[in-house]
Amino acid sequence: MNNNLIKEIQACTYCSEVLSHEPRPVVSFSASSKVLIIGQAPGLKVHKSGVPWDDASGVRLREWLGVSAEVFYNTNNFGIIPMGFCYPGKGKSGDLPPRPECAKLWMNRVLNSIEKKSHIVLIGQYSQRYFLRKSTKKNLTETVKNWESYLPKYFVLPHPSPRNNIWLKKNDWFKEKTLPVFQRYIKKALS
Image (cartoon, rainbow, N blue to C red):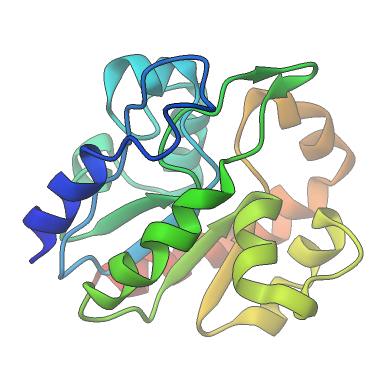
């Protein structure tokens, strides 16, 4: 089932008329993925390589997770599901938001194809708004500060992009207090 679904997603051209480039959906999961990483959308480098989180954000994310690339890219460990499967294009201050069509078309089908969905990591405001709906706080910082209120189902994180270095410096509590708990959460989920 999952191989067929992944092939169907990878062949999707639904947004081809609104994208400034050829669609190239990037997704990676299996029915037995223990942890689901739900992020925003691929960046240009990932669009070109076709490998999820194959950029500086991915390096930092794997550091936050406390796992090697080998562990990260094993779909029995991690399912990697963005809110928008294709690179959305460049905006004025970074990449455009994920295309909303992807979640409507694919998210329920993907989640229903995964046997056990007990560990879901929501990265950034787009996935947090989609899954947490009205329980998100007034902004991403407040949502991430209140990560404990979303457990045991969800663990919320800021985006690991180098563009967020200023946020990380302003919010040193994240590295000091949240990341150690997050790494234990991931270690337990993978064991």
